[in-house]
Picture (tube, one colour):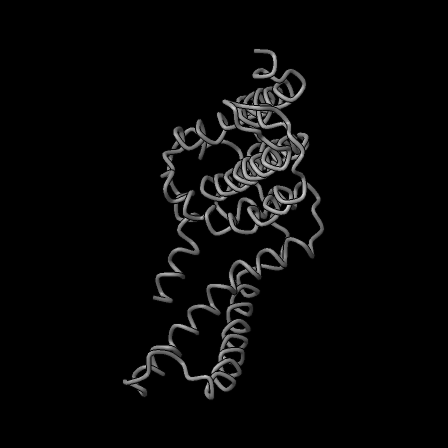
Length: 260
C-alpha cells in the first residue's frame, strides 16, 4: 500500500517524458504562463462566478494537447478540495444576504463565494499539476534559477520533493518488516509507535545523507543555468507565451460572460 503511494507521488513527473506540443514548449514559458494564470485567476472578486468560468478553457486545452488523463489530475485535486471547501463553507454560513433569486430560490452571497472559491482553487491547482506533468522537475528548478528565485527556496523544493520518496520508501520497508514479525497485528501497535518513528527518522536521515553525497559527487553544487545545452526559448515559444498571457489579461479586462 505504501509502495503504491510512492508511485502515486511521482506519477505526474513520469508524464513529463511525453512528446507533445505542450511538452516541447520551453519550461520558462510554461512557468511564466502558469504564474500569470494563477495571479489573474485569484484576482477576481469572491462573488464573480461568471468571470472565472472562461478560464476553464486553459486547463482543458492543455490537457487535451498534452494527452494528460483528466481523472488522474482530478484525483489529486480531491485531496485539496476539503481545505478549500472548509473556507467556503464558513462564508456560506456567515454571509446569508440574498444576491439574487433563481427559479424561486434565493441565492446568497455566501453560496456565490463558496462556488467562486472552489472554482478558483480548481483552476490554480490544475494549472500547477499541468506544469509538473508537462515539464521535467530538473527543468523546472533550472528555470527558477534563471528567474532569480532565491537559491534557498529552490533547495528546499528539491530536497522536500526528493526526500519525501525516501521517507515513504523507508516507512514501507519497516512496515513490511513489522508485519512479518507480528502476523496477527492489523497495524503498528501504539506501544511500538515511538520506536518505529524514531527508527524511521534515523534510517531516512542516513539514506538521505548518502543520496546527497552522491548528488554532490555528480556536481549538484555547480550552477546549471549556464550550461550550453540549456538553450533559451525560441521565437515560437515566446509567441505562444505572449498569446497566452494576452488572452488571460483580455479575459480579465473584458469579462465575456458578463458582456453576454
